[in-house]
Amino acid sequence: MQANKKHTTPLGIIEGFFGREWQWEDRTNYATFLARHGYDFYIYAPKSDKHLRMQWQQDWPTATQQKLIELRGSYKDAGIQFGIGLSPHEIYRDNSRDQRQHLKTRIQQLNNLQPDILCILFDDMRGDIPGLADIQIDIAHEAAALSTASRIIFCPTYYSFDPVLEKVFGKMPDNYWQTFAQKLDSQIDIFWTGEKVCSPDYTREHLLLVDELIGRKPFLWDNYPVNDGAVKSNLLQLRAFTQSHAQLEGHVAGHAVNPMNQPWLSQIPLASLPLAYQQAQNYSPESAFTLISNDLCGSALAQQLARDLAAFQDRGLKNLSDTEQLALRHSYSQFHSNPFAQEIIDWLDGVYLFDPACLTE
Image 1 (spheres, helix red, strand yellow):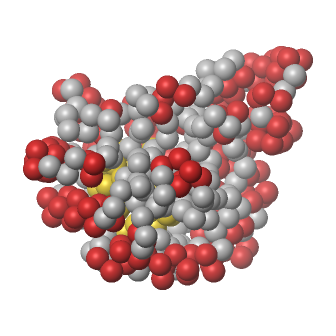
Image 2 (cartoon, rainbow, N blue to C red):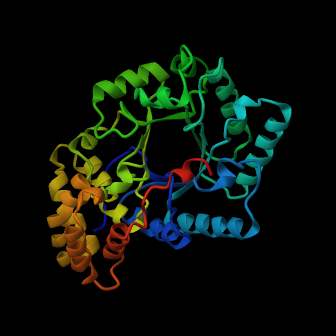
């Protein structure tokens, strides 16, 4: 299924989840997949890569550097922009000259990969710090000045109206978002996840409100179909994107999707987003799922997936009886060597169960 690109909003994926990471082969394969389906960019930012997060000051080992150079080449060959997401973990809690020198050195190292996009990410960090916005803006401006990337995207610590962020990361400082509107370079985009951390829909009213609040159109970080948390890892989120996604053209600066830990199964919902933008009011999530699953998986497996969709996405693994799990394992084991079916079997076998340790490593 070749996408007929008619949208102007940049669409892409950000590999930005916790837990079991993709293999290098999976990442490479996505260059072709994204190009075929009308996507524009890929951002490498796995939470498990300590050289982008907890040990962000340290460059990758030589072997990893080589893998990233090869990966960057694959995306260039496919005509897909390549991005890197750097999370200088709580750099603002030690805003010393040494830390700033580390930042300068790390950005220069990232420049060796010739990224088209650089993301400076402050998500999933403590935020109850006086003057937080000003410190983060200063860091973002410094990184932007050093980077050779043509696009800079900034992720604030509070990137949604969801109260869970203050519950986990502390009370948001006063006028946090308004400070970005006033002081953050207007050429720098800001990631936003919607009314919730995992928002099922996006209304125009909400996006206009955010536009006014942060002084620019939000760049969506869409946490569907990601399933890396304690609750979501229990699910396989395979349905196509909702109808609301067909109404986003012109209201967002870009749209980055955070996929599942399962790279093959992620392709099913991911392939629907460009269709939503292209077809607008004519977009049907149900029709998109049928079309895409048949195209990617073959008709027999697509029919099986349609039958089991509610079990995978609504009930989840923990609510399936041993008998049901055994029946599902039998059904999908018949699709020999099919990577989509194999990921379902692995999910049933507990390969993707959430490990709280992944949040602190």
